[in-house]
Length: 108
Image 1 (spheres, rainbow, N blue to C red):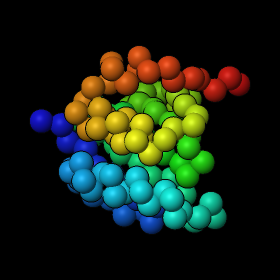
Image 2 (image 1 turned 90 degrees about the vertical axis):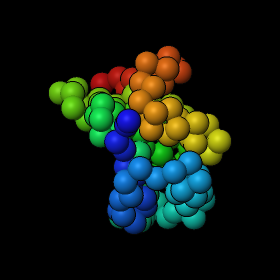
Image 3 (image 1 turned 60 degrees about the horizontal axis):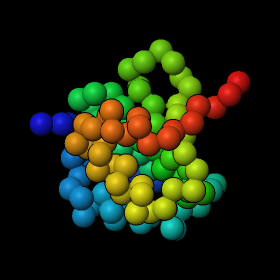
Image 4 (image 1 turned 90 degrees about the horizontal axis):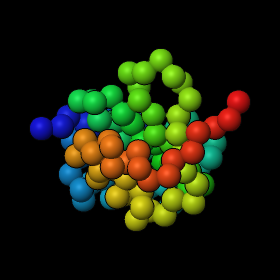
């Protein structure tokens, strides 16, 4: 079983939110303010150390929090439906499937 948690735009964490709850958290992006303390929301898979953060602008970032490389992968123009799919895969621990989705690396 995978252990994971979400963090919403207010910084509140929830352990193992179900799919309905994940969808509701993603929907809060529609009402997030860019000047909020946490304009992004995140799902962190504590079992494998990977996270996916979602931003109101449609950007998603994915990073391994256990790795020394602090250069997260990213995708643009992520719909709320696609964001939900990404989070579901992460919650299930399907990292290899996620990495095959065309993430980009920021160039220095």
